[in-house]
Image 1 (cartoon, rainbow, N blue to C red):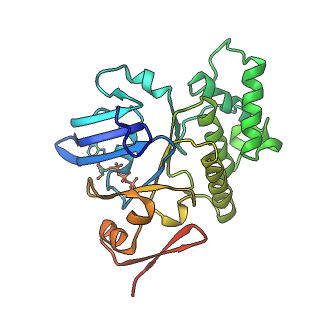
Image 2: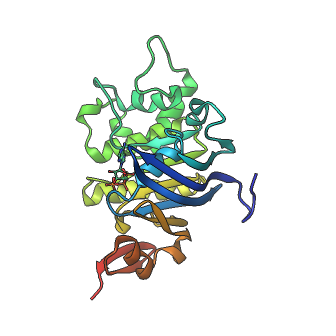
Length: 264
Ligand SMILES: Nc1ncnc2c1ncn2[C@@H]1O[C@H](COP(=O)(O)OP(=O)(O)OP(=O)(O)O)[C@@H](O)[C@H]1O
């Protein structure tokens, strides 16, 4: 396994292409995410971000090239085995009925959308779920039914759900989309808090303002091709962002957080 830069490769994409219905969606995508790194994947609408995330989550196979997830080559192993090592935070998480926050978080342990019939959590499972709920600041909503939660509360509950499975990799698909200012800041605080436990993560977003301050690396994608990838300070620059979005943008950084304005 590749260990350069000190960390083990958690994700390695090499010369990845992805085609659907005769359309080339990804072309020659290369990047490696190592243990403890927190990556952001940025690009305009339709650039191919979600497609990369689904390859990284073992939800799709590349048309050519290779994808290695936690040392497993996609195509050579049962993808279900890989998926249980990954926490996938998807704001469009499909949920029926009205499970409580605790029940939703417990589904991170069972690896299912709903709690399996006749499955009972052990005391350890419950303690773990409750401790994660405390960590994300939802103690007072522990037994609240899902439909009554705000979008921000759901976002945080889904992060707790993803962590309940002790993932070796966390994938976050636009986790702050649609949140109000305070809810977004709370969620970013939660994500920054995860940095202390050295969780390896890959977060997809369109907006620089939605990058956690603890982001270590970034990849920029335009029309299915990476235009830059590497340490965040080198990648998230006015020049690189303007190129990726094909628009003149001035990038700012203040107290660790990024901002973007049209450059004049
Ligand atoms: N099954 C498919 N058949 C044809 N085209 C597809 C298919 N799936 C995705 N695409 C196209 O591939 C491109 C990349 O889609 P993807 O969802 O990965 O982009 P994205 O960067 O996540 O976009 P957004 O920011 O808008 O969510 C888009 O142009 C999309 O229309």
